[in-house]
Image 1 (cartoon, one colour):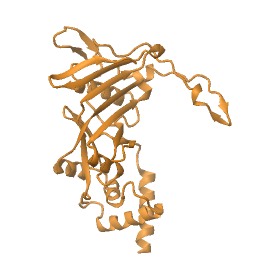
Image 2 (cartoon, rainbow, N blue to C red; image 1 turned 90 degrees about the horizontal axis):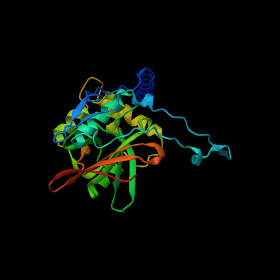
Image 3 (cartoon, rainbow, N blue to C red; image 1 turned 90 degrees about the vertical axis):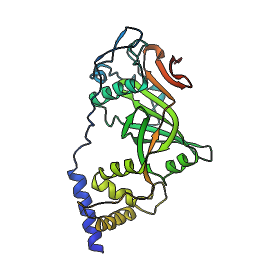
Image 4 (cartoon, rainbow, N blue to C red; image 1 turned 60 degrees about the vertical axis):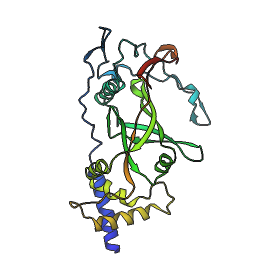
Amino acid sequence: MLGWFLAGRRWLASRMAAAPGPAQPTVRGRAGRARTHAGTGSTARSEPATLAGQRQCKHEAVSREGGGPDPNGLRIEYPDSGLTEDQLADTWLEQFRSWFADAVNAGIPEPNAVVLATVGTDSMPAARLVLMKSFDESGIVVFTNGYSAKGQELAANPFAALVFPWHSMHRQVRMSGPVEVVDEAASDAYFAGRPYGARIAARVSRQSQVIAARSDLERDWVAQARAYPEGGDVPRPPGWQGYRVRPESVEFWSGRQNRLHDRLRFRRTEDGWVTERLAP
């Protein structure tokens, strides 16, 4: 058994050393294309994909006390470009698709990273970064262990808030709404497409539970890898599933000079979606 454990650790180390950098998702977005809004005749253009490079700013001088930077000295003045009503798409999905394509094309690392905020039975909010894996008119889909802290919080209180923090572009997208579990077939299909090591890890990790040492994880990983060799089927573990956030509010935030930021929101009502501007 010791031989299997040591061999597994060497295999893990070799895979990590040989692993390529994170692949950027391919998105066929609508960045840079003109859009004509129904009923207005106006034409709006999203900013080009090189936006991140055009908007880079330097931090002001940082004062240091006790050997560390003072966060109060960190400040950026945003360029005077943003998002106006005549640039806003007709639907939140079209606007999100355009901005997401901009983030991908600008080279932002993991542009699908999103802050997921939940609230459990103790009324204590919790937030963490997860990865969006798909989106359409019905909402945003992420995958995780249903027995994790966030999974239990969503089971007790099936509502969530999301924030896409595209800092280098001076943009963020905020969403909130009810959450539903995706069907088993969708979870099976996504899990089957994950890298082998990630599928084994999903079977090993008792997510959010206290463990004694990292060596426990590595030993369990080797045992699972022995039970399910690479190239064969790795069953999706019980409770590992997808969640869809069905937004009822979607806000597009864009930084502007003098902190007069643009905040345009799509909000679902009984009669359909309305758009409105919020004070910064």
